[in-house]
Image (cartoon, rainbow, N blue to C red; front, side, top):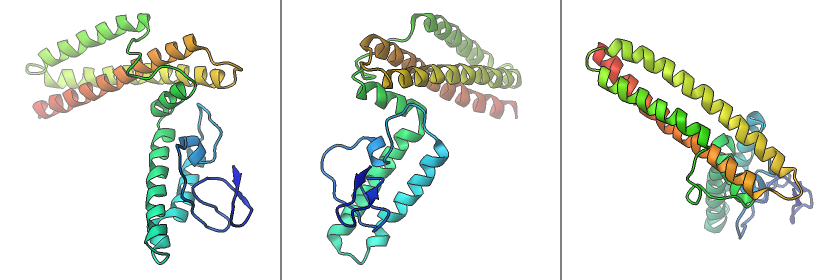
Length: 216
């Protein structure tokens, strides 16, 4: 939080002041947490985040500044886009985790593509399951649809476990005097596993829709 240069009140976001409703043109990179006036954290209260989003959206909506001239309206449009991008990151646990890993000096998704070694056995088993269900779909679509529902439930449980592991690990690194490069790399690998599960869920979802359509 910083002091508003117009009214000297504390402003929760560098993009706009809630007291005097002034919006600011900001240069340089702002983190999603900066934009929402929040300290970096792996765990974010989604209700508070959405409430803050609505407050800032109102302050910066281009229509709210429609009579203030093109320059100010352009700032409002830019700030609104920045706000929406920041919300997208902070409201999604996987995106938030990915941002924090890099912000703490850890590897990006493109530079660290490995997954945890124990997880690779699960990947092989899940790939085999999907292949079997794909082969069985033409002859037993209803049974395949039922099995896919169970399969997706299993994947979601594992995803939730991994996300919690990553977020808890990041919270510990945020509280450390010096983040561990080794631990951040390990957390990135676990997050890669989450990304794999997301792709598998998407594939299983499409396959289930095909099975349900074939069954009818």
